[in-house]
Length: 137
Ligand SMILES: [Zn+2]
Image 1: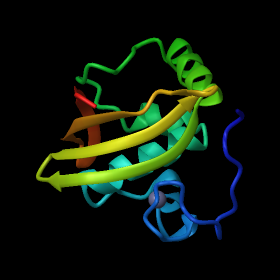
Image 2 (image 1 turned 120 degrees about the vertical axis):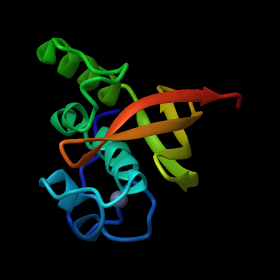
Image 3 (image 1 turned 90 degrees about the vertical axis):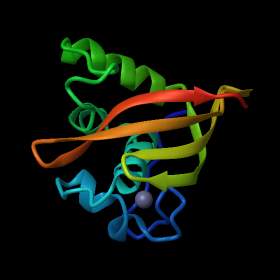
Image 4 (image 1 turned 180 degrees about the vertical axis):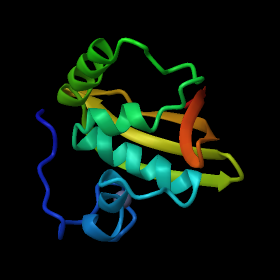
């Protein structure tokens, strides 16, 4: 699968029910995420659209997923995005700095869905993805 191609008037891939231009696009254009849930949604959508720069920018520099080699990191994200179909995001709960979600993903025909509790931290006044703990399916 190649990354999704959508227009600003299409439904947002994060499943909010809003159109992209009223949901995750403003964050992708540099807007500030008002909450960890909003950042989580925008990162899922960024994966679906293969916006590697946004994924890197919203990863906390002290977090476990941060990679100092930006070129290699970008290639990894690109490969992941191109080989994954982002079928659905469900926010199961969101409180304080944590968001529990289920991502329904497919790699070729294989179901690679997972449930995770993500932790977010502020960095220079912006929410960033800090770490994730997978849950049993
Ligand atoms: Zn969205």
